[in-house]
Image 1: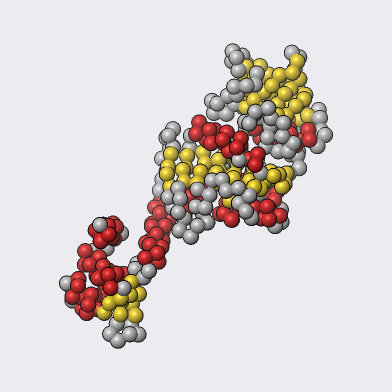
Image 2: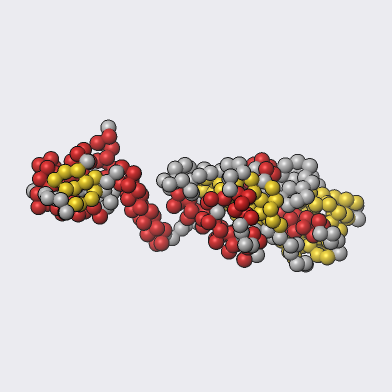
Length: 357
């Protein structure tokens, strides 16, 4: 089975039958003379030199011309696999450079096994983010996403980041400016899977060590579907985010400010109220019971219920809402994004404008 699998795989990489025969002759011996390979592969000795050059260029063998006669040595298995993987990575880069991506389908799932591909999917998701990024990243993999997070922060997005792993706390402590990368930075010494989601629409979920292990062993799921993104987010914000300790939080944003993603507005309101500021909200809301549309203008924010920044005061894991004072008394407003509305609050709002009282 081993030899047939090698033949099939190398043929898929474009090696001819004679090149495969020659490689197997070298592989089975560890090293061989050109004459031995010629006899085993059934080709002329002069042609063996040509084949050996091609195999060397692919990273499969080493041609030792300092020996007499010339020796052909098979590279160790992992080196050979790494060399072929590099060709695949270069091929993927070339394909992506000319690929005209069609409109995304509703399903939008992709299982990924190569670490280089995971990095590209992360870069793509973060580049497409328009309002919010939520990231749980192994601290030793942070360099792979640091620039993209900084770019998202510079574009004015709300960014949450939890660094995980044994060195997470020290990694945050060594940052010159955590605020360059996120509004809120936490650390935890646990080892959860890597998780990045943007705008509650799409993201990447990957094995904890996929970007840092030598050979990128593991799995990843890239997704572009609101229901899936929201489900994953709910799990991570409920079960992983609270495990971290807040290491940095940005200053409250300047007001007035409009937040197209309601959750970002809740975070901003939390920062302002924690700082002792009195703030009001402008909201176009929909009643969760009968879908009645109402407009709240300049309603005082009396309470902010959430768990993304300290102090947390949510009554249930994914609660993220504002309690505002209206003419009818106190009402709770939750976020509604892409058709997913709250199931606990009295009203839903897609966006919110926050102003000084």
